[in-house]
Length: 107
Image 1 (cartoon, rainbow, N blue to C red):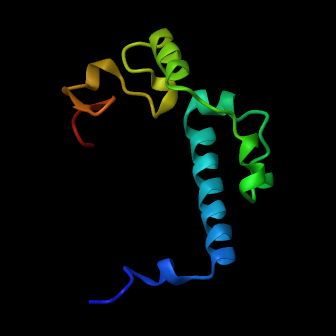
Image 2 (image 1 turned 180 degrees about the horizontal axis):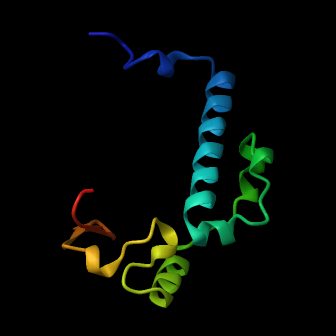
């Protein structure tokens, strides 16, 4: 059995951090582009400038209470944090930890 799961575990630490921040930027762009709440939260953030641990503080902290408050303003499922779920398409709700996953017919 190999000592490491894959080559990603053994890459140079500088390269690993650069690649991780590249992936983080992709996720931040995705959140800003597809979730209205994160579009507002990240509106003043220049994602391109987030390149290392020192610049992580540019990302606003989002507390669980902030999310709950915004979800309460947009029932039934706080659609600001994901692609909209139309209530008439929901066929079930699956609790998953602290998250409710709504599901409907697959199209």
